[in-house]
Image 1 (tube, rainbow, N blue to C red):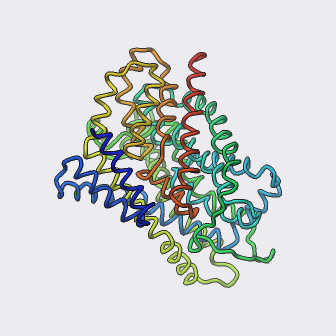
Image 2 (image 1 turned 90 degrees about the vertical axis):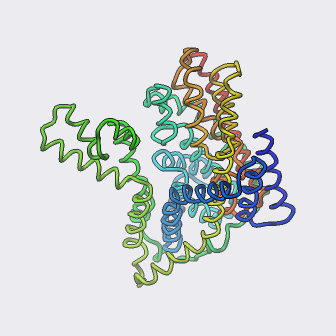
Image 3 (image 1 turned 45 degrees about the vertical axis):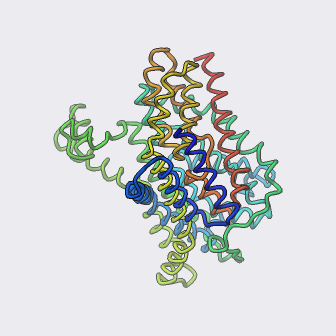
Length: 473
């Protein structure tokens, strides 16, 4: 019954958007109420779920969205994006531009959260499309495929890193093994598929990208252009390296159980155990805490915006007032996108509170199949139901842990199989679906044809590669 309700909810959403041309924000809210009522939830409980979903979603990504939009606008208006674009074209050549974007997506997506890296790089896609006259989607899919693979398969991203500990897998091996399915998944979902997308001719919303004609002497140098673009990447990579070296910090509840007050105390505990002197413990733990603070996606993007304003915006006679006006325009441009993403979070929360997850957990216990394939299927069902790849991953791992241990399946491959399932079936309750749709000006149908097909292809190629690897590992 819960899965039937989810199906009805998706049908309602499709009808509201496709038939009645309702804005996705309103359609998602109406569908959230409909799913809650069909699940016999009280009206006030439905409202609480919607508000919680909006609050939780926005609390996690609103600053990332805002700072990402500001940084993107600065890269665009200053000509930095064009500087980087021209140099990439010179280096790789137009015929290899998709591969250049795929490699860029992987390198940037490895240390950065998907939303943050997407927002940092999307202006480059717009600039590439404008300067090369190539189809926007043909350029966007290789980049986004690499970002998705990094997000779902590879440490130090939160979901694969966390479930590595649940499955008792070696994080370094997960990263090493994850590079194997990454290659065919990106080549198939990011390069090969795009031959079917060339006829999809769309333009980004005018508020997000406007054509700028720069004289050569007006363009910033390559060095400061790259500095502004990679500042958040470098800062977040530092945090990832710290986690790989010392382990990801435990949750607050676990810190409390260990008698540790905060993150600084966690690092003090580690250095004390290594025999460091009290003074060294204080200095080292303080440095690591500060670096972890800077590596947070919100702070890293904030610092990047400050760097971009100082190095790119305040040049050629522009003032701080001009920079602030530009930043305000960038926020206005993504205001509806923010609302749509918030409504997607509300829809996801209603699905959770209507006990879909508990139902899936109950039916999965009775299934008997290859643990890798089962992890893939369970994660893909959760992804279909709740939208978030991270939620799908974190929910699947505890269910599959006893099965994986009983069967003796490689824990590293279990992490990858779960990640492959979590990238499947992206649709209305996934924030990535709406970001791809709105930023590239696609219709719902076109988003399914491109984004959803790409994501599912990555997942299918990923699990097939993992199953092949299981014959040798």
